[in-house]
Image 1 (cartoon, rainbow, N blue to C red):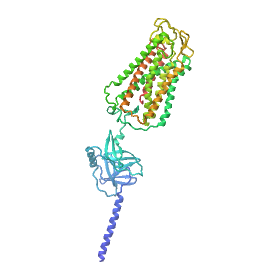
Image 2 (tube, rainbow, N blue to C red; image 1 turned 30 degrees about the vertical axis):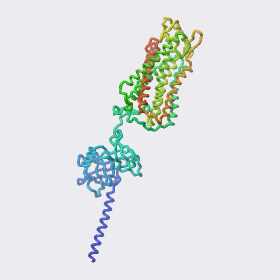
Image 3 (cartoon, helix red, strand yellow; image 1 turned 60 degrees about the vertical axis):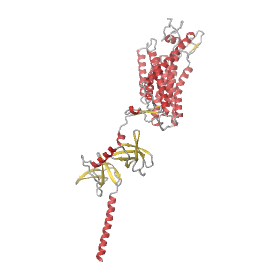
Image 4 (cartoon, helix red, strand yellow; image 1 turned 60 degrees about the horizontal axis):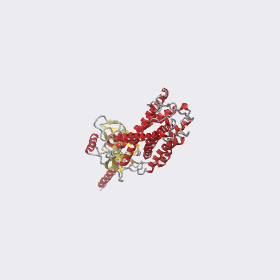
Length: 556
């Protein structure tokens, strides 16, 4: 009896010891919180590492290559702890913990390779939290999930039903939402594309441009739009455009005659701006529109050039007919109206091309997403100021040349027209023209009845005011259609492309023929007979206009 009691006591004591031992093992095998282990050494074919004074054992020591001296990216797989090394991941345990041997790192990496070879990503698991970022695994590849979490928030252990959306990978979260998954290799790859907005369409230049032509979808894209900011900056554009276009007009009134070389430089700067706008901005953007894959049916590669050529011919036709009308009227009444002068016809053609373009500029600015809006706004401000200088310098020069001299130079005179001055020329009949300059620097001409006609400041301001207002009007239109505007809609792309190309043709005609050739190439041109200092400064001004406006084409 006593012996039986002793055996029972021994058995009970043994059971208690086994239970305590089991609790100790369970506590030791709980997953420790550690990010990395280092200071690794080998003892009896087993590798041991340290982390915050705690010793860890590598359960399956890597068998290929040199042993790592440290392991990083430690994370739990269920109740086990795994850490990364250069060739894969290994299981890690506390030095005194008892664990079930796991496959070697070589076999584990091989298994992961088999997973990758078997097909596409179907699910990511073993998710961990790093700061506020969530990372999950598929085989040996780590994915960053487009979710934000905090240390006190439970994260999803896995994301399933992974599927591609165009070039991106999405997986389904616990709540059924699609979550973007980006592999570590894709995150580290440099983004070599340069993307910018033009009329609500995001164009990207760089790798893959030949495949997607700068756009991924023809559907409307919802972007963040700060409406109050756009409304406020509308007035900034109005003021900037006004400064550019009205500045040369009032500067001509203030400068003494000897300082008018400044206006010559500004005029040539404007010539460079107009030519650069035609080729760098309008022609290029028209090409982007006609190459948009959302615009189906446009297969002719010369579409942009053909429409630009049409705008060029339209400009020639309008100006040719206008000059013929002016010739007819001035042959009978040379001084009847400042509006009926050859130079006025050229200015009106120039302003028509700029106005078409400026409407699109205003729409372009406001429909760009907030991520690019401020950058584009700064570019547009400089663009409008430079273009205003180009137009304003030409408007300021209206009336500085006698109307009869313009007729004699451009279309030939009838009878005896008397004009004199630094740019005088003989009429078709061989008579030497004569005239007198007004105190303000403009030339007043009198008809046979003694009436004085000149291009007044009010008329110049009317022409300048149209330019100053047109871009803010375009911005207002853009703000009004923000909720419905789709820059990839085929009809929108076609309309913008045609307007850009036609405007390019108009400005090519105006910039090359009416500005560049008119000021430099003819015997009566102001720079054909100017001294070398003025000629050099004017040439520098024109090149500066081309360069600066061309530089702005990098962003707009």
